Amino acid sequence: MRHFGSRSATSRVFLVLMCAVLAVIVIVTALLMWDSRRAEYRHAERTTRALAIALASAPYTARALAEPSSSADVIDVRERVSRLRQDIGVSYITVMDASGTRLTHPDPEQIGGRYRGTIPDEAVPLTERWTGTLGPSVRTIAPVADDSGRTVGWVSVGITVGSIAQEISREVPLVLVVSGAFAAVGAVAALAGRRITRRITGDLSADAVREALVSHDSLRTLSESLRAQTHEHGNRLHAAIALLELGRRDEAIEMLAATASRSQALADLVDAPDALDPAVRAVIMGKTAQASERGVSVAVDLAATLPELPLGTMELVSVIGNLMDNAIYAAASSSTRPRTVDLRLGVEAPGRVLIEVSDSGDGFGAEAGSAIFDWGVSTKQVAPQRAAEGRGVGLALVDRIVREGGGSIAVAEGPTTFSVRLPLRRPEARVPHGPTLVAAAPPSVRANPGPL
Image (cartoon, rainbow, N blue to C red):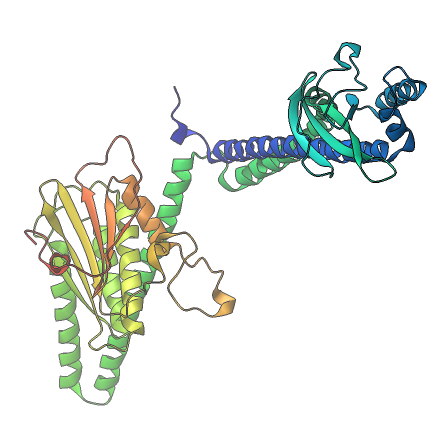
């Protein structure tokens, strides 16, 4: 069986869009049916109310109630209500005396029987839902008054629920047409999304697209690091050449010696761990140079020996590079002195590796919350014209890489510290779990994580 993660990104996009389309169709169909049902019930209430009041107000209704059941006026009323019932389409029209004894009914056997329903205490129309001799119905009962205003009877008009359901069923074809139109539009949109995705990703799997994104980010981080390192050494070299031209040979030698000593000390430190990839070392050294350009000092604390990490080279470059980028920016933007960034990498406990990056910045603020790990969210202040330049990707990418590696990322303030904890092996089943936000850094956050 083919694993879902191995499907192409195009197929996954198409599948997600089609699922969304189906969900929308179900919701739209349900809403249309509900609205149709509501409209039919309201129509039934208006129809029964209008007809009941009209019949109760008719003079021949009051005359019939004053006559014996076999009189011509009563027979005339029965004929009238029978025609009205068929012409208007209601289920029944019942004329009754003040006590509720039926004078008319669609079923002749019910004439003379007791009305089943609510007879109001006051002479006012009442609309209700009731189960009578013909089953559940929507009905309205209205008072019949004689010339003196005395209530002499009632007129009840009803439409059974079964009749209402038949009317609703007539709306089903229209609902299906509307739902079909939504389905067609959604299918076209899904196919368009699939085509656009295919143009961008080809037949790459979703995992391959993610790895490409990680690789792109890692290469960017490497290039920026190497540029900063080259720029720093270039500046020092130019300064030394200028000193030589001015005849200040001792100062030039001292500057070059200090530069060489500093670079060698950092190289020796980064070279210490056996399992640290050269690309990761280059990133740390480059970020240190980049921080120096911005007046930020970087302290690196690496364990002498490290176990094999569960992340690939590009993934580890992306994690360390992005965390250091954010820390350097925060420290450089802060008014706090000195401006510092601390990187620690070591074994926190048996079977777990800790990557910790702290800075002397002002923090990301309580209002940011867990949103700092969302795609497109950035705590950096940028000009409006640069707002769409891919900001808010770094921490989201770090969070994704760490979770897929079976690890976790925690954030604490005082100072701002990002702590990544990774198992020594990548789990078979990737169980996502979000980042942990800590209101204030506990004492152990800055403690030595183990044999560093």
